[in-house]
Image 1 (tube, rainbow, N blue to C red):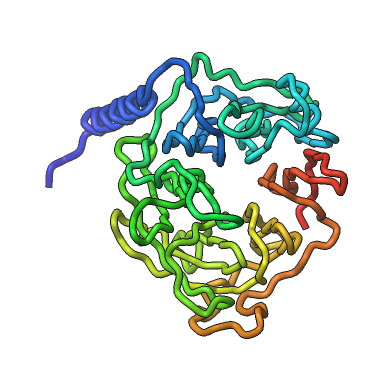
Image 2: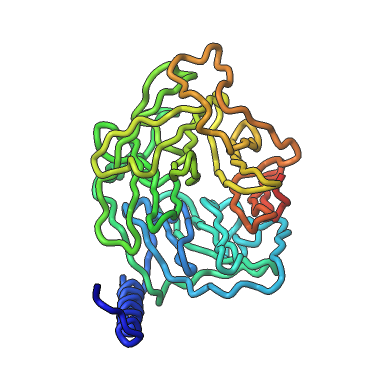
Length: 373
C-alpha cells in the first residue's frame, strides 16, 4: 500500500480547496449584469445567499436576481403594517385600487419582505418589486443595475385569452403558479402547451437549460375523475419517508404528493391524492413549519380559511382513487385556525412566526407577523 505522507495529504487538501474555490467562482460568475425590465411579476421565491427568483409569466421566464440583501438584524423582526396597500400605492404614486400584490416572500437571509406588485391594470400594468422592512419602510427594489440570470420556459402556453364568460383565461399567466428552491433546484409549478398541460419542473440552479418538465396527473375525488389540465396552485417541498416530495394543492381542493425524483424531463407522473379538502375553494399559499416536536402544513384558502395539517405521517394515508360523494372531505384531517381571517398570502418569517398579507372586510390590507399556531 502506498504510504501517505503529511506533505501529500496537504497537497490533496490544497487541491480540493482550490477546486472548491474555482467552483464557487464559477457559480458566482453565472448570469450577467445590467438592467432588468419585467413584463409581469408573479410568484416569488428565495434561494441561497439572498437570491430572489421572480416569475415573469408574460415573458415565459424566471429571473434569478442577486439582491445583496444578506445581513440579518440582530433582533427578531416584527411586522405590524396596517393599510400596507395604501402605503404601497403611495410609494408608486397611485391609488390602492390601481395596485395588485401578487405574492409576498420573506428573504431568510435578512428577514426583509419582498412584494410582487402590478401598478395599474390591463395591458399597461407596470410590474415592480418592492421591499419592506420591519420598521415599515417601503422601497422600490432597483432593477436598473443587478446581477441576474434567467431561465426561459420552452413550452409556455400562448399569450392569449381563450374560453368565454367565467371560463375565459389567458393560460400564459399560469405558466408559473408557484415556486420553491430545494436541493439546488428550483421547483416550478404551472401550465405548458403540451397535451397534458399541468406541469412540474425541477430546474437546476445555477440556471443552464430549462427542460420541458414532467406532465402530472391526479385523481380528483370530488370530481370523480383523473385530471391533467388543472395547474398546481400552491405547494411546499416536504420530506415523506426519507425522500423529498412536492405536496401540492389544487383548486377545489385536492392535496396531492409527488416524489421530487420523479420530475424528470418529459415524464408523465401520477400523483397520490392524500386529501379532498372541500369544493368551491382555491388554495392561495402554503408553508411548512415545526412546533413542539411535530411538523405541520399551513394553507391559506379563498373560501375555507386557514387549514392546519399535521404532516408527520402523510405517507400512512392511502391514495384516494374513488369518487368522494356529495362533495365531502376525505383523507388527511385538518384543523381550521378560526382567528386567522382574510389571509391572502403567507410565508415563514422565522421558526416561531409567520408573515401574512391580510385583507380586511373593507378591502384594505395589513402586513403582519403572527405566532405560528
